[in-house]
Length: 140
Image 1 (cartoon, rainbow, N blue to C red):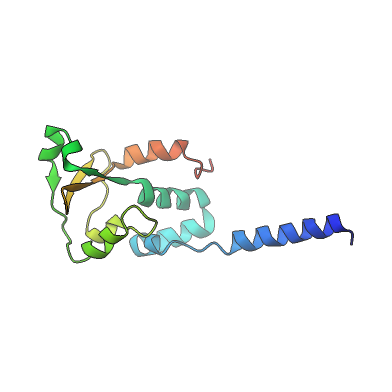
Image 2 (tube, one colour):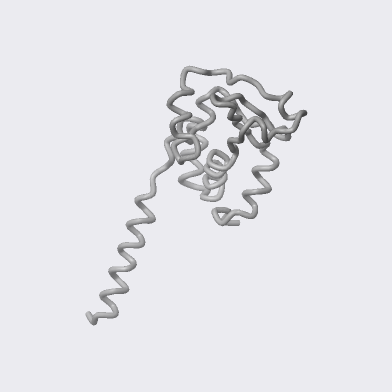
């Protein structure tokens, strides 16, 4: 085997190892169960969407950045038991807003009070879908 063939075989082996070693995101298993596992195995784009929704379906802003009308929509989080550990990882790939007892609405943003006058803003599904269409993880 010449050097070129050796490197092609080595590259293919390394690439296939990294592809097959990808693991399902445990946040999705916790949130969606079998739906997430099925998407992971059989529908990469659906899995990518679920992950995108979890990672890009929210943002955090200062309360003073909200309009007067948006401030009227601010709610308290329904489940405060897991808030401390989730706030520690907000903005990372460990954050899971679903564990706070909230879920996305189809067409309305939601606003939740966080400590230090910060607001968790959940985007509506329709807006997330439009963002996903333009995102590189969308394989369609």
